[in-house]
Image (cartoon, rainbow, N blue to C red; front, side, top):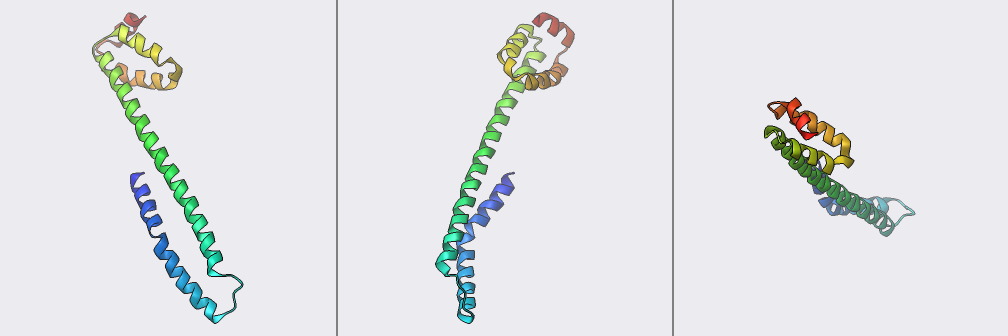
Length: 129
């Protein structure tokens, strides 16, 4: 995703250059025909598009940052669960599950993964009860 964001960013940086090239081509075309449009009308339209694209790009960047933050938090939680399972800490496991009870689906997936690191998963589950 980072390379996609970089590609979009570099494309947005080229807008002014491309707009100037388009203006030159438009002026050349207008000198050879009678177009009902003026460059100011086209420039206004392209500036509006540029602002819209820039705004959407900034929104996309913020979504990417949020996603990375959530991944880091999730990895920290998985690491906590792994440590609990490795140490056979049934009480810690019970507290972890009750603290994260609202996110059942994530906790279930983490438990499946974490219990593989426990020397005796069944005993640890019994201890947590």
